[in-house]
Length: 364
Picture 1 (cartoon, rainbow, N blue to C red):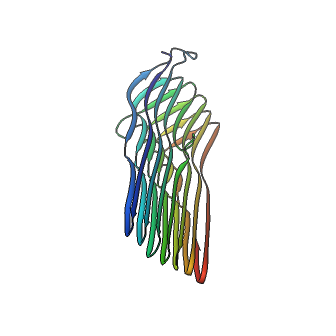
Picture 2: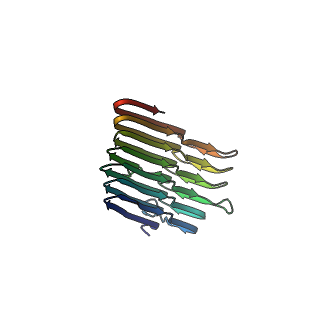
Picture 3: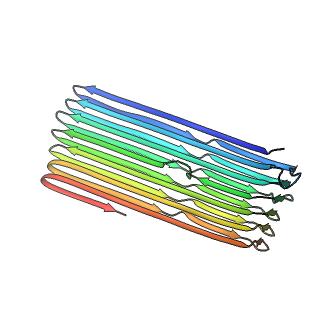
């Protein structure tokens, strides 16, 4: 045959929104909440015997591929207008814990090319806006935006419970990749304003976190041979951004903002015990590129004005390549590598204008 493919694909385009409006001559208040949650599973798997070559030019190939793409956008708006007191808040949240896996298990395979690939790309954006205005009395506006991405992306060749033999006259590729083909990662934005003649408070909290598990593996005892390239790779390209802005005005005005962005999790490649890998070029590599950004701003004005800002950006992804005892890598050019390329950027600004003005900004 020309080739055999075992594929599983998923494309999700999810949108959610919430709007809360409170209008009153005395007291106006409310909360708006919008949530997107995804815990799906996308799996491509093959076990068994497959002989696909009649000769060097047969064109027979085997592909086992799982691919999942997520584009999620959520917005929550809360607005309160009152003559005396206005209280309003908004919450926008995205959670993703999906599993994407491709595996070629206990098998005997002869083919021109063999590919076992798991890929996932994510764009997740959460925006929360809270605004409260009162002619007199108090106004409190609060906004929380949260994006939490924890996908698992795995590509596996072999099965520790049974024998696996793969022979290719061309290439053998085992690959797990996250956000390498267009995903924009996680973005959380929170904006709040509180304004009143007497007391105004604006508080904004933006949380963006990624904790993926990306793994490519050749199991114990697997025998894999390729005439040309044999590669086992895991890679992730993570963008994580949090932005928070809090604005307040009144005789007493207090603005508070916190933007926290973090990247954790793991990217790893593992070659099992007594596995045998042979090719002209053998590449065993784990890598990541991480960009984490946190931006917090607060402004306040009044007879007494104060602001507090916190911006925190952290990268702590484990990147590793492991070749177990008894494993053999044989080739004219053998590469074993683990590379980590991470950047963290923080920016925090606060402005207080008043008879008594104080402010504090923390960046970490």
